[in-house]
Length: 289
Ligand SMILES: [Fe+2]
Picture (cartoon, protein in one colour):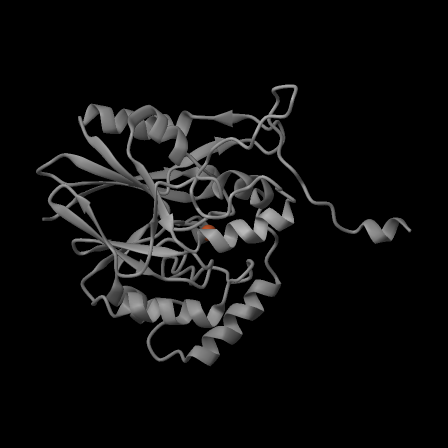
């Protein structure tokens, strides 16, 4: 069964969110939904998520799955909000538990459960989910993060942060438990899906102001990707990737995003004044003497 695919572009984080629909049953999955968040005011907004809700309602779709390709460090997930509004089950990679462990320590979140129980389903390599008459095959594609997954639906693969469009290369590997060598192997796994499979990116940063592009066949990546085309060895790739990662800034929303995203986009618990807060671990304290 060939699924219908609708892309939504969240400009502030350059993220692509996809609604994938089984044309017969009208059941759909949403991949990587975004909640708007303003770092300066702390204000959450549902404007972008509402465009997805409107589409699902106008098309009379039934939301089955809210799928995360990984724990994002650059935007807040709208998965819990969409579930509250439309139902569906939130799923992510089973390695989310190791990310929860890492950030439980970073943020000193004493009450955080690190068994992944905030998600409805934890997925491992090789599993299959039903989406009406379409099936969703789960591939573990770690490297950018340990929990990274690719979702294969028909001849389409939603690859999260592994590759970007060929002119932008590949995703960074310098987050906790990231690995350029692992990402190399994950990308080879994606290439082995076959040249005719269409890959859907999680981000497009539109280099040199080019028009938005978010999908291309495996063959185009193998020919043209500036980091990892055919013929690039694992060692060459790891060297390029590590050099590039040393020059990258911390994502603007890293600390806020992870505090939401490791608990499936729920609100961090309110304090006794009923106000919700985020934490920011301070660094450089020793400079104060
Ligand atoms: Fe990411």
